[in-house]
Amino acid sequence: MTIHPLQEKLDGATSVGLCPGCVLSVSDGRGGRALFASGHHTYAHQHATQPSDLFDLASLTKVVGTTASAMALVDRGSLDLDRP
Image 1: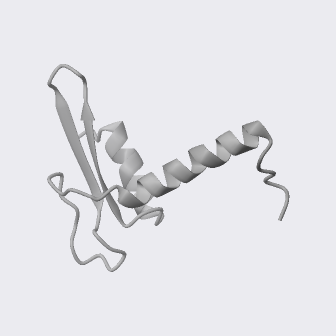
Image 2 (image 1 turned 90 degrees about the vertical axis):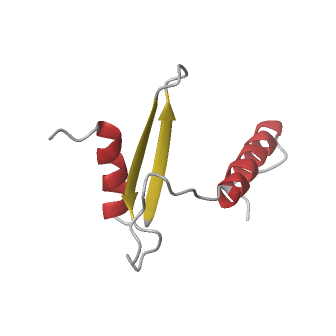
């Protein structure tokens, strides 16, 4: 059985501990959709992730928003990343 390249990437990320588990949904824009799941809900490995699991992205938005803001400040010269 051939494993999808996206599944291989997710399995690789969870196997090296980048995250305990993840679920990825991919849409082709025409109604086609693929779901991939890997790993577990926590590093304790008690509950395996399922394609139907939903995750909260609130923590991700904090990082993305802060990074985008910091990049804009660096571009304007208002933030020097080399300064303590």
